[in-house]
Amino acid sequence: MFSAQTYINRRKRLQSDMGSGIILLPGNEDSPMNYTDNIFPFRQDSSFLYFAGIDRPGIHFIIDADNNREILFGDELTVEQIMWTGPVASLAAQAARAGITDIRPSSALADFLAQCIRHKQEVHFLQPYRGDLSIRLSAWLDIPVNQLADRVSVKLIKAIIAQRAVKTAEELEQIEIAVNTTIDMQLTAMELAAAGVTETEIAGRLQAVAIAAGGNISFPVILTANGQFLHNHAHPVPLQNGQLLLCDCGAENAMRYAGDLTRTHPVNKKFTTAQREIYDIVYNAYKAAADAIRPGIRFKDVHLLACEQLAAGLIALGLMKGNAREAVEAGAHTLFFPCGLGHMLGLDIHDMENLGEKYVGYTETFKQSTEFGLKSLRLGRELEEGFVFTIEPGIYFNPLLTASWQAAGKHASFINYDKLAAYQDFGGVRLEDNFVVTAGGGRLLGRPFARTAAEIEHLIAQ
Ligand code: GLY
Ligand code: MN
Ligand code: MN
Image 1 (cartoon, rainbow, N blue to C red):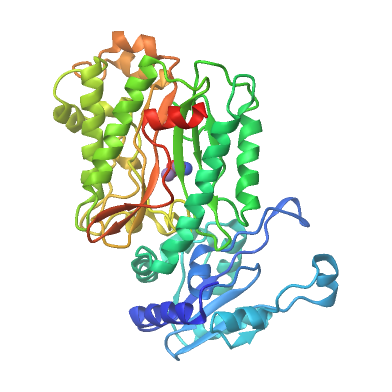
Image 2: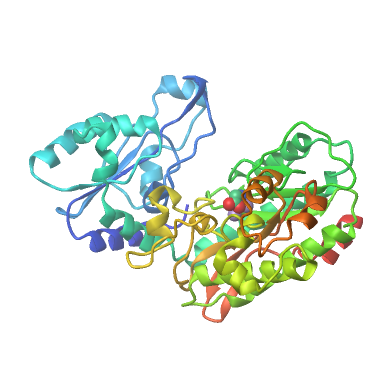
């Protein structure tokens, strides 16, 4: 945990930004896999962690801005529970470390909220993303489950995003720990990759690296020779020489901050000419985007700049034709890059995505596009100092998408479909790093790590 003062300051600002009402921040419960006592690894809600700091299941937090008080609802473990788990830190001690002193039994929360509602206090809550919380919220607030989404507090969403989007120095330290463990995961993938080894064998070892570092994976490992499918996971199939292995993985550190890196490398340690040509185009797009980072620039413009680099490279290679800017304006490049350049990163790998992309990545006056490609750009708005996000351009040769576009003659003036036939088994290349915005531009997070084709070949040759 950070110091108590960190959590106290965050809550003070949240209360002041909200001004009045009840701010309800439910913690997560343990979640059963296949029966009640067999549970998924516990993951606390990130906004709860951010403001209350306590990483254990079954506790809920209230900031009563009307009466300037904070209450934690939760129970100490009983002797019978500790019989199974062994001793754990007392809730009172954990709460004290977050500067919270008023603790009440969890059974008192329903009555507390009912009383708030009777007294016409406004209860601010976020959209639940777990079914069990939806049911509980519905009962606590007397709102049908299917109407919760209409009643969430946009004011609370915005107040939380305003704080969580700007990372402090102590948060950056934690994110860098996660990024450095993610580099260890990437190195493990490079060491293990060889013809005959299965994707799942490697993916399992990557998860072990993250767990051994004191945390866990920040999302299920994407490790595939079929990188043309954007979030394809690992399969129990052996790798083959000549394939490109795309590894997109992340560690979550002990404080639950995330890393998220992608490297793509040849299974037999040497890029073919065609692989190297595509890799270099992706690298150039990455570099152009990374160099463009500064406070005040719209991330959508950084995305479009990267898209133009991708299109220019593909035109030079003969896979596309015409003018790169016009091709991007028309959306022709989305055959190869159908997704967004990046997303915020923090306590969540897609930071705060549960609060709504339209609030996290966009504003009231600058809205997310609904066009193919741009609709998957999770971050579009102006960058501010302290924002942490990924830059992750790629080129993907998706034969299914290509066939459907070709059949429809889509963007035929920009795409050389006849030349694409040779790339139908190519796979995909993605390069992903994590950056923070500083006054002077983007600062790459984590220790130095290979990213150009030459650096990657040099590293895997060792
Ligand atoms: N790791 C998933 C992503 O890069 O968004
Ligand atoms: Mn990412
Ligand atoms: Mn990723």
